[in-house]
Amino acid sequence: MLPIVAYGHPTLRSKAEEIDESYPGLEELIESMFVTMRESNGVGLAAPQINRSIRLFVIDASPYAKDYPEVTDFMQVFINPYILKETGREWTFNEGCLSIPDIREDVIRKSRVRIRYLDEHFQPHEETFEGVAARIIQHEYDHLEGIMFVDRINSLRKTLLRRKLNDISRGAVEVDYKMIFPLQKKSMAVR
Ligand code: NI
Image (cartoon, rainbow, N blue to C red):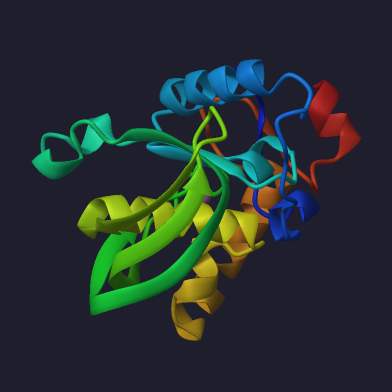
């Protein structure tokens, strides 16, 4: 299992780089990302969250299957993805993020996304996703652009969360998976 970087870490704010088939250890990395995502009860994990600034994310939406049967089999690897367009009505969904434990907020996004990407065999695809599937893709894709879901809530809500976000960066949060906290004092880390 890989440690997940917490809010405030510079890698989460970088624009991720494309990779090619020669990227070292890619198969193992993808495997580890799936393990890490499932162990931490996430439905998506982007490479910047495990401190790699590359255009890669994985999704396994099966934990949502009960509430959203349409994503029961939605398990996929996205390499070098590019969102071509977002269409449909705007709708609200309560989002969370493994890099921002303990915070969930309603986020408004469009309901449909057209995306071009490579699968784990570097085969190209162009597909349209809708609803919850589109939502997870939009959230993970944002990570590759250095965007966090709390950037997409209104500024009053974000102001109210400021202290909590700062606590997360300092490691002052209860979390049951391994994390790297960017503002954690060394004395706390060795305690
Ligand atoms: Ni996230």
